[in-house]
Amino acid sequence: MQTLPSPSASTDFDMDDWRSGYRSQPNEYAYEIEDIDGKIPAELEGTLFRNGPGLLDIAGHPVHHPFDGDGMITAISISEGRAFFRNRFVRTEGYIKEKAAGKPLYRGVFGTQKPGGPLANAFDLRLKNIANTNVLYWGDKLLALWEAAEPHRLDPQTLETLGLDDLDGVLKSGGAFSAHPRIDPSCDRTKNQPCLVNFGVKTGLSSTITLYEFDPKGRLVHTHQRNIPGFAFLHDFAITPNYCIFFQNPVGFNPVPYLAGVKGAAECIQFNAKQPTRAIVIPRDGTSPIQTIDLQPCFVFHHANAFEADGKLYLDSICYQEFPDLKGAENYLEADFSRIPEGQLWRFELDLATETSQAKCLIERGCEFPDLNPQHVGRPYRYLYIGVAHRPQGNAPLQAVMKHDLTTGQEEIWSFAPRGFAGEPVFVPRPQGTAEDDGWVLGLFYNAERRCSELAILDAQHITQGPIATLKLPHHIPYGLHGHFMQNLVFNA
Ligand code: CO
Image 1 (spheres, rainbow, N blue to C red):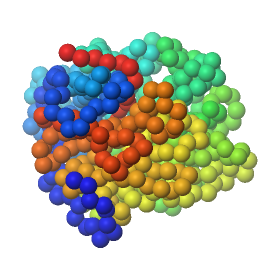
Image 2 (cartoon, rainbow, N blue to C red):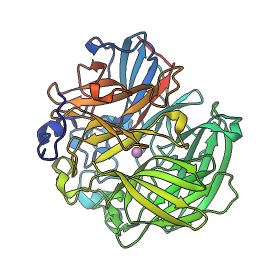
Image 3 (cartoon, rainbow, N blue to C red):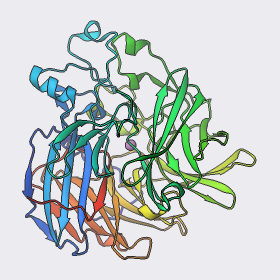
C-alpha cells in the first residue's frame, strides 16, 4: 500500500474511487469490530467521536455540496484491545421533517436547493441546522456542532439525539456556536484546569463576535462581545493563554443570487485578492483593546495552533491562495482538482508592538485537518499531524497522514494511496507518556478497493512504519469532517 511519493507522480488516485467515498450511508449500526489487522495497543482506552455528512442526498435528490449533508455521528469505543462501533444520524428538525416528507424542504448553505427552481427557493432564508461539522464531549454532554446555530445534545452511549442544547441558557434560540471550540489545557480562570473556549459570530455589514469560556463542568466562566468592521467568514480561531486570534478572510458577500433563489449563501462569497487577510487579535481578558494586523491575502478555514514567544504571537494556519470553491463545476463530484487551490501550512509571526507580520510556508504539499498533542494547544509545540495529498505538489484529495517536526522541518508520511483516502488525523497521548509525540495517531480512512472505511492506528513516533492496527469496518462512512477522542470514556454493547 505504501509507495513513496515521487515528484513525477501525477495520477495517484482514480476519480471514481474518490467519488465512491461520497455515497450516502443511510444505515445505523452497532457492533463489535471483528476484522482487525495487527493489534490494538492495550493502553489505548477511550472513544473516538467523529461527525460528518452521512447523507449526500435528500430522498434521492443529491446535495450540491457535501457540507450540506445531514450530520451523522460515528463512535468507535476502544478498551482492552477490543473496539465497538456505532453510528447514528443527528435527529435535527430538518432531518425528521425531510424524512417524513420524502423530499428536500430546506435550502443548503452550500448551494443545495429545494426542487422547483428559483421560484421555489427565492427569499426562503431559513437555515437548516444540520449538525454535521464536529462532535465534542464537554461538561458531561456530547454535543454535535454546526457553526450557525446551537449544538444538538446526544446520548454519549447510544448517540440518540436529546435535542437542541442552549448550554444552560448561555445561547439564545438559534444562537451561533462555532464548530471549532479550543480546549485550553490550563486556564487561569478555572484554577489551571482545562477550559473550553469558543465563539459565535453574527455577520453582515459589520460583525459581532461573542466569546465564551466554560469550565470542565460546562459552566460559563467568562463571556465578552466584540464588534469588528465588515463581513466576516470565521469558521475557526486559535487561542493562546492571553489571546483569541481570528483571520478575517478578504471576502465580500453579494446576497442577490442567494435572495433570488439561485445560489446558496456560501456560494455568494467573493474573494478579493487586492484586500489583505486581517488578523484580529482579541485579548481574552475581555477589556483590553483589539488589535488588527494585515497579512498577505489568503483564505483560511482552519488554524493548527497559536502560541506566544519572544514577545510575539505565532500562528500556524492552512492557507488557500483564494476561496477554494468548485470553480464553476456542476457539482462537487465533478470538481477539477487542478483548478482549485490546495491548502498549505503557513506560519505567521505577529508583532503586537509594531502591528506588523511576517509569514513563511511550512508545508507546501496540499494539506488540511491539523491536530497536535492537546497539552500544547495555545503553547509552543513541536509536532503537527495533518492530512496531506499523496503527491508533493498541486491539489489532490487527502490520501496520507503527515507528522511534521516544526523544529527540524522533518516530515514523516504514511500514504494510503492509490486507493485509500484520508481525513482528519487525531493525536491521542499515551497515558503517563511524557514526550510530546508519545502516543497514537488515529485516522478514519476510506478504502476504495473494499468500498469500506477503516480506522488506522499509527504509533506517532513511527509514522512511516504504517498502522500498528487497522480496524476494518464492513461498510463505509462517507468522508467526514471533525471529531475528538475522549480518553477513558468507553462504551460497548
Ligand atoms: Co472545520
